[in-house]
Amino acid sequence: RKEVEQDPGPFNVPEGATVAFNCTYSNSASQSFFWYRQDCRKEPKLLMSVYSSGNEDGRFTAQLNRASQYISLLIRDSKLSDSATYLCVVNINAGNMLTFGGGTRLMVKP
Amino acid sequence: SQTIHQWPATLVQPVGSPLSLECTVEGTSNPNLYWYRQAAGRGLQLLFYSVGIGQISSEVPQNLSASRPQDRQFILSSKKLLLSDSGFYLCAWSGRRVGRSQGAKNIQYFGAGTRLSVL
Image 1 (cartoon, helix red, strand yellow):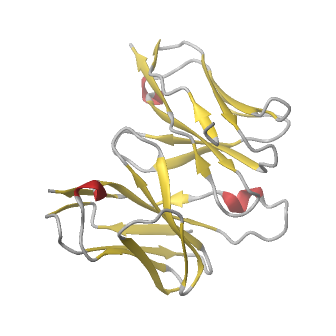
Image 2: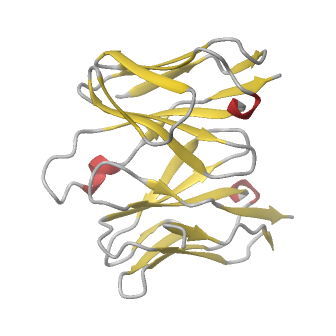
């Protein structure tokens, strides 16, 4: 089993749609969780951290379910500019290392 | 504010040639530094990380090496490139982790990357 697993997609959605991605992680001792966004041929950039109580940043909502070992990202009112690959990132061993999922590709269409 | 510089942006090298990619960080001291490789359409693979000058840990055995001659400088090298070394190389930094509940210090910030094609 992969340490961090994501559906690679692509998720093709129309503008204005709500879309959700899930990500599962294997190590129950994981401490920190993040979503990164990577545009085509660019570097990954931090989208948001994921907190135990769930957190929201504008149209983006992230949630953590420790019991089931998954995190989710919900995007409301999708924009064309949201088209990108979304990387689920987990701090597996409570050290400084992050493990990146393979990414979920989102394509928002007019 | 902190910035990370990585160069060159693109590189085309023949098989068997040497490689040197450089990464520097500004605006922070004692960063943790990382080299990743991303093959086309794939996830990020951690190659090396460093917690201080001269301290390098290798995650994957390969014909690449890394060095950290200065606190904010991280270099990725190879003596002889292979076709399989082609990919998108990313340097990243993070702050020092202090204590258990320092999740923000785990955040890694990436350079713009070097796209390497070995022909």
